[in-house]
Structures are given as C-alpha cells and as structure tokens.
Image (cartoon, rainbow, N blue to C red; front, side, top):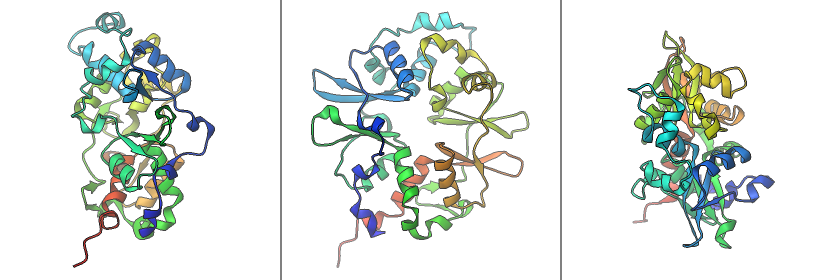
Length: 320
C-alpha cells in the first residue's frame, strides 16, 4: 500500500469548473439569506468567512439550520404550527450565530472547522473524514478565499477510481469484518414512515446520526431520511416539515419515494463501494431477507476502514 504515500489532498479535487470557485458567506449573512443561497447553488453547506479576522470561522449546513429549527422552536409535546415556530426563531440573525446555537463549539471535534493544506498527505483526510467529518476546507497557499472544500464523496470517488491498487480489500465480506473500530453490522436508528418529518430530524440530532432507516409497520425498510433531504428547504417551505415522512419525501422528490439502497451481510466491501458511487448515496443499508435493517455502511465507515487498515504505512514502526 506504499503507493498511497505519493498522493496528497489536492489529488482529491474534483475536475469540474463548479468546484474551482469557492462559494462562501460572511459573518453577517443572515440565516434566511443563507437558506436561499444554498437553494440557488443546490448545495448543502457553505463556509463562513470573517472579514475582520481575515479567516474562515466555520461551515454552516442545512443540518445545523434544521437542528436550530427543531430544538430552538419546536416542541413535540405541543400542537404547533409553522407560525408558532417562526415566532420563536430569528431568521434575520447571522447564520454564524448558529455555530454556537446548535452546540457546534470548538470543543465539538466532529463539527469544528477542519482545515488542511493542499499538500497534506492523503492520510489526513482519510483520518478526518473517518471520524464522521463531512467536509474539509483546503487551503492552496494563496489568498485564503481561494480555498476549496473536499467532502467524503470526493474521497470515496477517488478510492473507487483507484480500487485495483487496494489489493484484497475488495474481497472483504461485510459479516466477517469486525475489527479496527469498524463494523458494518450494527444497530441502526429507525422511524416509522407515518412519523412526522420534523420530529424525525430532531431524533437524528439526539442520536447524533445523519440518517435514519424509514420502516413500515412490519419493520422492513421502505426509505431513507437523511440530512440530504433538507436540500432545497427555504423558510417559505418550512411548513413541509410538519408532514409525515411519507408525505415529506414524496413532495421533495417529485411525487415518489426513493427506494433505499441496500445490500446483504454476505456481500463484499467492493460491492458496497460500487453502490455508494454508482447510486450517488452516502450510505448503503445492510438488510436481511425480509428487508429489516441490521447494519449500515456509510462513507465514514469506508474512510475509517482504509485509514485503520493502513496505519503501518502512515506510521511505520522504528527500526530496532
């Protein structure tokens, strides 16, 4: 695996023009303005640049904004309307305030701002993204505003492109791998398709996960609810959050509910990575013959798998 040593962070950059120009907001941009920017650019997150400090101070995303809405305003024990929620939140406040309002403090390792130089070794994004960090700000050594953002998706696509270089990892069977802090068969959090969307997003934050398995009355998976399903949400559409999961997913996905991408415990690791890339999803659910979820393989798991299994490359033992 020594071939990994020749690659750096810049090798993960996607080759498309949209990726060449960093989209960011400043510390005074409001939550409402941020929502509309995310929708207009069809993105889920945006870095915040502090003009006074001349530095980026964080990354705000739809999940954080949803957390703010769900916890600062919504009470599941009461009958609340959208107007009740909006009366309790201030969408005119700077989005930068939500970095603290949602608990995303500097002491919160997963949600702090992570920055790497473009010349850093590949081990660094593998380690960071394997901790559950979704995106990393990459500096190029020039003007700070020329920085780029790499995501878990960029890493998984790179791994997929270089798959043949990774030897026997493609033959690992999911049910047989339970080591190095990576396990694919594990407890998953589920919600009923008849549950409300806003309470389900609230559950995500409580359980500190970015997706829930949506099941029917028999416990079989019928859909996935994830932070990506917040894409396109503006304050004018917040009323949709009071729908059931079935109604919400049907509405935001153009009249139909997307089937969950699944695999079996007897499938190979390579099969799952193929599904992640080809189906353009962040996770593949492990289900039994009845469709009940018994595990999940996320992009975080893939990054941690490759980082953990190549520690001897990154940190070789001293010769005696």
